[in-house]
Amino acid sequence: MRRTARTLGRWTAFAAVIVCCGSVTGCSEPTGLPAAELRPAVERDGVAFTAQAIPAPLLDRLAQNRVVVVGETHLIREQGELLGELLRSLHARGFRQLLLEWPHMADWLLADFVEGTGLEPGFVPPLTNVGGSVLTAVRDFNRTLPEADRIHVRAIDVNLDEYGGAPSFRNLLTALSRHLPDPAPVATFLRAAYDSPERQTAALNQLQGGLRAGETSLSASWGSRWHDVVSEMVEVELASVGIRAGRQSDYDRTAGDREDVIKRLADSRLDDYGFRTVVSAGNTHAQKSRLMGTEGVEWLGDYLAHRSPAAGGPVFVLCVTPARLVSEGASPTTLYDVMSESPGNELWRLMHEAWPDRIAFLPLDDPVFGTGGVLMNFDGTVYSGAPKAHYDALVLLPLSHRVPVQ
Image (cartoon, rainbow, N blue to C red; front, top):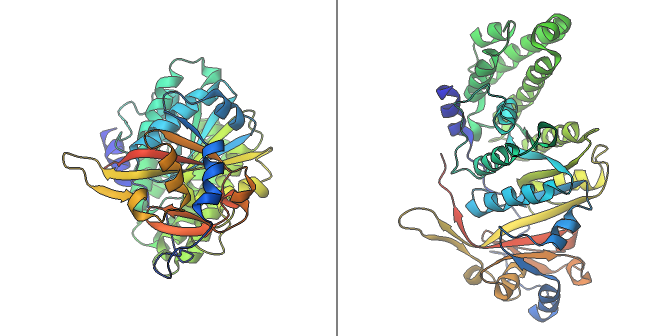
């Protein structure tokens, strides 16, 4: 069990939000709509609050949707605190599921942790990781609820090298196999060489074939749920092999391949699910139309809002980012400050000027946010766009802290 915890510590770091061409920074002096056109809508429609007291009207607005996508800037402590409180507050409004941008290989382990089934009592998600703090908040909240009312957490990302890649997949499958009455054919797979994409693909194909051929007997031995869990682990790892192998040489293609897996997993979790769902993913994944990231990719937010057959209702997309970001530790340093890194008409800056010490929620209902030419600074890169096309509301955190990576 300790080995499982150490393994998870290697891949719990999230990749930074991807930005690419499309920024006006470095190409020309930022222009965009003047502050005088934006400020009235910001000050009229914005709502200021603290994470411990999310206003009921804000929650009621979110609860009109079957799916709420929370885009985030990764590795920010306050992001995790806000998401944990949002889940607790939305629970009474029918939300029972969190889809999390974590590697799929840990899906079974996250469920074990938050639902308290006790398979791996030695596993504790690193609290320095945003996802870890949310998992702990959900676990603690679930302990106060009847089993039928608990929040379920599912992992919907591929298995990247940032998360430990192939070694972590093998270690987590090893840990799972200890809970299977008869681990064959998993045991055979775990003895095979797994040190190159070619060998990984061959070994996974062999395991997949064994799972399919022995489905009846394995389902009877393991239970159909565990047969499905292992089968899906293998399917996602097969896709992950090619994505890991090609990320350096063909990032654009593999970014699209990764997003396709994320979308497929999200659909599988939403299909016929009887309650509302929160999805937590990076701001790039969350966008409803492309503002940043690799061109040509249909991002998760876009898919859920416009094409998903499983979403089954309206989808509301939040974008969350900090106004000022500092490193945690004895000697914190400023990593980003919207007041010094943004022109005077940049939207996040206008929100921070209005509410410098509280969280600001800005619904993008006003027509000014749909006309284009609105400047938005994401962690030092300024983009020009129509924010209403990309998100439904913006959430600005005040002073925030980037947690160290474990």
